Image (cartoon, rainbow, N blue to C red; front, side, top):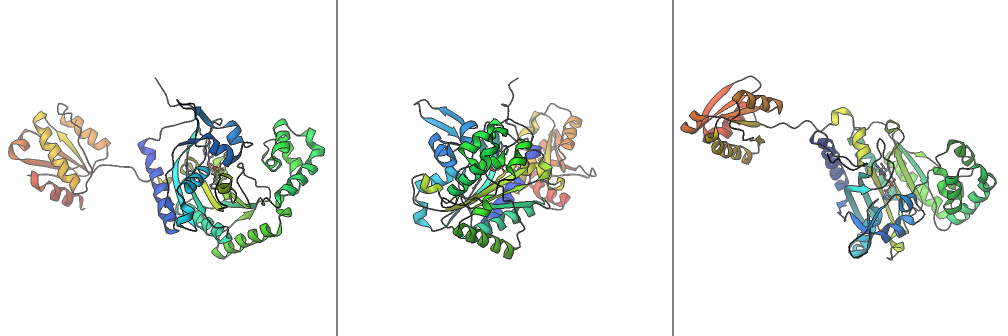
Length: 419
Ligand code: HAM
């Protein structure tokens, strides 16, 4: 048997309702804040991620699904969608059409990671990007929208962790300071942390080794070394968040695994998710559009891991199980045509109807199937119905049964179901 590839999975109908529920809420809430949907391709030029996300990041260095197409071009299944959205923004000259462009997306991303609970090789993100303003009100309003969205899903108390990672003015000096502070301990760090210290010192805060973390925790956080502009920006974000009533906690050692971030960064973690506790992450990326060859357009956004979000939904948000209004019970080949016709009438009236043409099966077996589907009615079509141009409708809850002319089927079903 051929099975789904490691790190991928099927979302079966019983679970799909939860996904639809989450996506419908996202569309509704984001729409209220002026975000509109963008759908970008699943694969892009590899160079987009190398330049956008950064060569030195784990994502680009270790986790991309990269392949050559038949003409030898290097393509990559998107590991994230901020760089592709910035590419599309530039390609379509969106900066010329509007000063502030708000976009959202829902779709699959691909990262070659070691699969475990909540960590997949194909996973879905629900994300938003606001391009064109560096005003802290954009950060605060977008985070408010995020809080409204999560609240609607009934996720309960969540913790928003906020930080600033500075900008090109203050970060280089801080990077040197961090290196100087940690170099004396370099040999006590594990190989991966040592590599980070050399190539991307801020990322040492994400080292996985607990003993190393104890050492690293002593280093001064970037929050204490922001330039005046970055500090003012952060104060602005915090002030607007407080005014909007969005709760957050400062997390001075929160760094993110993508190179494009400037200033605001944040994550929401859920302890119930276990080791993969990050439900979502995001921040400001004021240099990205320029890095991709465009004008200096600032940006802010986040992406929620949809798999993790669906896993965390409270039980009552299952989206409800689907069940049809009517299932046809067809007694003999001669009943098939009348069944298709009757089903069509009901569907045109907005009812959901299932026709499974197994006319040789016993009425008992077909009724059992209708019950399994939790159908509200069964519509019986046998020889006498065909001869008389009638249909027999049986309400499955209490067995009430009526035989009516085929033309009256809609009115009768509605009356029996009180709809
Ligand atoms: P990220 O933190 O790499 O950020 O991913 C965002 C979220 O995607 C994570 O918090 C997590 O819930 C989910 N996620 C990531 N990897 C996996 C995986 N292997 N399996 C399941 N879920 C996963 C970004 O991707 C940025 N583009 C976010 C952003 C948007 N920043 C600004 N705008």
